[in-house]
Length: 218
View 1: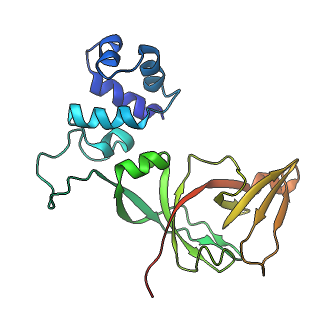
View 2: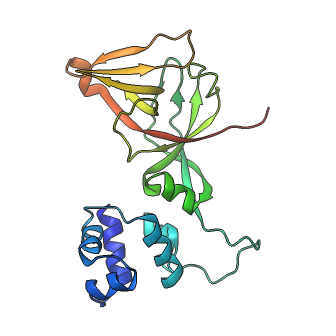
View 3: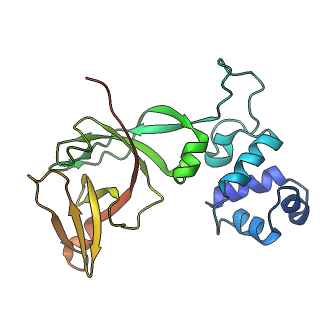
């Protein structure tokens, strides 16, 4: 998040933190924490910053593209702010697991900026495709899942992309004392209990939380 803080400083320019914070209705200490990377700017502040300073949402959040929003009117009259999210090569397994491929970007897809900000950290989000049927009936083979890699704390009832010794799964993740529990929705698959203090612990990585699901009509 330090990079976002640096971009906030660029937008503020020579204006003092006190004056800039007052202009946008936040406390100076809050602005200082955002600029230092200690905290994440909230949605209301970011939307107002984009609107009043004319900066591009994607530049503020990811550093991509130019700082200033394009003066060219959108092709439609809906006037919607959009951000692109990369689709990576690594496929999430909902069965036996599939090897990570380094996250090489295949292509990018557009989402509403407001939606992404409400869900988490857009700069940390990727799209990945699912292999297998272990999360049926909610997630099907071939579905695309939006993963926020900034959210890695296990939470009951939430789905996460998880890497176990190089294999990538999408599972419900629960934490027990000294254990990670990976659960499937398909009753044909048994849950996996992994000793977080054993030899396998170094091979476990929660990649991020699944926050959106998309699928093609068949």
